[in-house]
Image 1 (cartoon, rainbow, N blue to C red):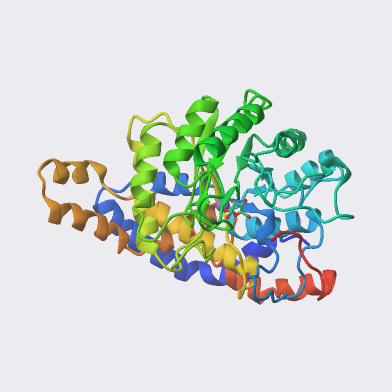
Image 2: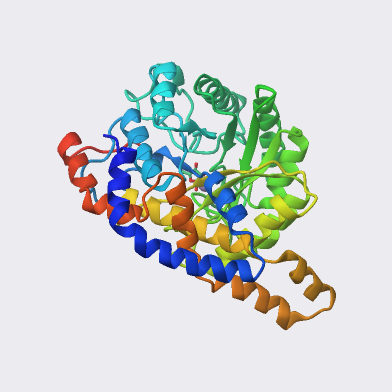
Length: 435
Ligand code: PSV
Ligand code: MN
């Protein structure tokens, strides 16, 4: 199923005049303050966030999983779903695959199909946190050893070799799809004091990562994701950004840290971590989600939108206003959808991300720096909050309109009964591979 530009333009017609009124009013206000609105919209149009292949089905918790019908049963159907989101929002121009959940049977055809929907393949994700069930193992990914007690950090060399080889195969699959990066997230760690020798576990992990890194094509990047707990609850081998940074530095210049917003202990100052990594040129990947308690995987901006803005304020400073030579990070939404239709939820997340980015883009860093130099704390806070409290939604809609997207993607999705059509085409009982 595809949505055409004509269909979107038809939908936009009845909304355009209201929209233009709101946009012109906002544009006038912003230009008066010295904001270059054309430049902000240009950046917004360029900003593309990858959708992970595992976020298109119903998520679940260990207490239950509630299906919603029309879930994508194949990789092609997952790509089709991302194509729908991208057609409406013009901001999700890439898909990020998890192997072995999504091994393409015919990579050239898969690449061509994604390309026809305007989609590229962003970072490839390896999976050494699950044992693949017998009978469901893909011939390219036969698994002999169990990951119960770790993968890259495992005490046994054969276990480590299997995990390293899996990552190398993921790189090879990525090459055939045109991807340029590998994300490594490890569940490795311990659940009980005494279980693991911390030093040896980290040293073994570093050796394994170096081995994987040696397989990386020269134009590829490797992202090392950190997480303080879960599924292990006493320690994780790569617990924080410092450990990730240490490993990335040791691996080489194409290895970077990956920040997942849900992978921090409560009240961690994530914006400061972002600033530090940008300063060192080591922020490679970024996973968006929101949380109240832990790695809750909730819709971006649903719980802490101000924190998201503060993070984007640092991202904008690091990417566009400072001397940092950090390459543009790989952006991805890493969320799970237990209650809402994933496509609606993902569109809400994309909107929250763009809003925070736009708010970050209108911050006058020159004035902010001046206030800081003068230790004018009140003024510095006022400058930030003024931007955060400006309703930039008309600007985001205008940028989307100019890219041929829908003024209001979620209402298009509902009015066009897309979910009902997907259920009709795929059935009620399909289940997407993933968590
Ligand atoms: C782990 O919690 C994580 O954030 C990693 O990025 C995984 O790839 C993803 O979630 C799905 O398990
Ligand atoms: Mn993640």
